[in-house]
Length: 365
Image (tube, rainbow, N blue to C red; front, side, top):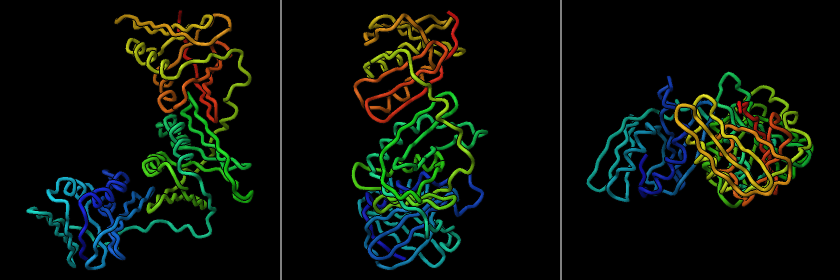
């Protein structure tokens, strides 16, 4: 096979698929990217057997063909090439010669016949979701996915297609983020799935501002088609916990807080939260919050903020990182913090579909 391609297009195609390649694989072929040259396009595919991704870019194809080359090595070479035009030819032994300006590289690849195929989605349930809405929903929830591998059902986003809505939920047992959006689909398509973290991360890289993403669901696989790119992934099998029962009922008090100001304040004050308790305390009085942290061996920090609050004096402590995470990923001016008492979870909301439940921390006064 032989093709010419611009360095920018080559690098762009590789970068869209390179993150799936596992560095700790026992099968050498899984470290490679599958390159297929035909019909004026160069297609790139990578997989780790759980998640696979494919995309394509324009190229001048002089001779059709396919091969697989070491993905990370190829990315590093293309990134450093001196000239913007690249010529690649591959011989019968899967040895690739790469020429660009005065540079020449030769890389040894493996036959494309060894490369595992991506799953087939014939007869799968199909959904169309606006890219912008899905991207926004994942941004508002994915930071709360658990990284504790002993509770593997929490290592992904729970997506529930029910009653004309798509609900996305992520939790690690100490906090929970949830978003829902209206979506049209037939009642026969109602289902619940858990999409693993790696697929969520790859999907977030692909999603843009406009157009739809086509989602296909089979029994244990999901695929997302975004433009020329296709992402396929195994689903996490198991029962997701009943998240609705951890969402507190009616709150007693609501505080209206400027999102940016709260984020900045918590970030500054948390510099002196102790490693042991790792908490910041919010002390509420009328239209006012005092945010404090202290570390017995280092010192203390406090900062006050004006808010809208009419309730009785009250204090509650949260993990500062868990409090900052949703604030970073929202874009509204104000957030609402709904509180019941010092020992019950706080609930952060906005105008629109979003809810974040955060467990309080015990602090000795």
